[in-house]
Image (cartoon, helix red, strand yellow):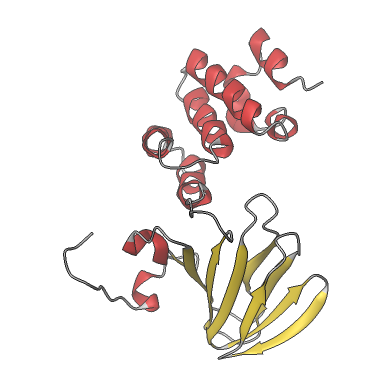
Length: 213
């Protein structure tokens, strides 16, 4: 944060190795979600296929460089630089791939008529890399710090359980797994096979937690 009336940045300077430029996080934007995504190679995924049914967000995409190909609700959209794609319906599946190397898409989203709340995928995106690298203590701390900042906590709690299971913190892992499935019951099926939860799978409480009626 700053006392100045404005801040500036370049998308290229914010870009991470996976092509994500976390614009909202960088500036601390609170009114709406905004990010940029870059595909360095032709046919690279720029916007992964998804819908916004859980959030109710409208989303607007601007192709700032290169050439993208969108699919929205099953309809193909050719999108050279300068194209704006507005997806009003949260239920519509959407996604985009780069047709040229160096294609960048800026995305903006929020739910009409409601105050914007950041979504936890911003943190989980970094957590996955930490868990994959077995940096479980770092992942745990990142998740604990994030729990109070996000309303959609199911995936945060689930990943926290994974980190704690790997750290040998069985009671905490089971407690957080129970809380995660309470918020996101669909995670139960994934939990049954998740290798990160292997250290707690033989605990009798695990079977009780992941049994969904």
